[in-house]
Structures are given as structure tokens and as C-alpha cells.
Amino acid sequence: MTYVVIELGDAETWPQRTWAPGRVIPERRRPTMLQPDRETAEKEALRLAGRHPDRRFVVFAPIAAGVTVKVPTHVTITGKVVCERAEAALAPIDDPDEIPF
Image (cartoon, rainbow, N blue to C red; front, side, top):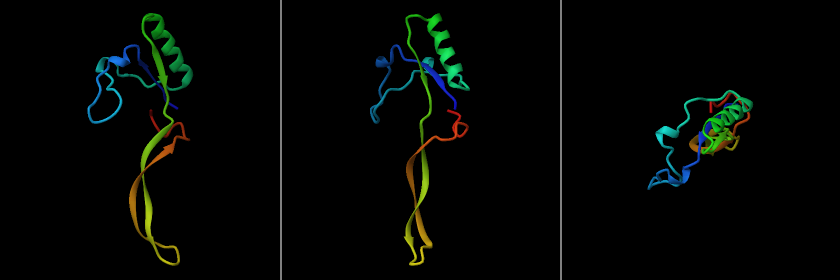
């Protein structure tokens, strides 16, 4: 599984979007590296905290992905799918290599 480290010390001051909840990560705070495993990500967070003692570095990991799946809408009496529609679903991430982050 891949991880990212983000500095969140001033997150309460980040700009908010008017059309969606949450805050926008300023460009200077956006992660530039994907860490290959948790141990490496934690070491990087510690390294950064050591260099910047007044800041807070947080390790993030993917836990779920929004995907589109096909859902049957009409079936024959024998169970054959005649028509289907696309629907968004939240899928847990089971395969660590499935998502680069």
C-alpha cells in the first residue's frame, strides 16, 4: 500500500470551497512523493518533524475507492440481464497495489 505525508499544522486556515465541504490543500502543502510503505512514510514524517519542529506531519493511507459499477435494472424470468445502469459505489481497497495512493 502507498502512503503520503502532509503537513497539517495550519490546516484550519486553508481556503474552503463554496460548493463542497472541506478545505483545499495549498500548493505549497501538497505532497510530492508517494511513500512505498507505512514504515517509510512514518520515517519521513519523523524526519520532516525533526527539521520543522513547529509543524505537524500526518501520514495518510488509502482505505476505500469510489468506483462505477454496473447494476442490473431489468432481467428476464430466467435471470438474464437485459438492461443495466452505472452506479457509483465505495469499494474497500483489498489489494495494496490496486491504488498508487
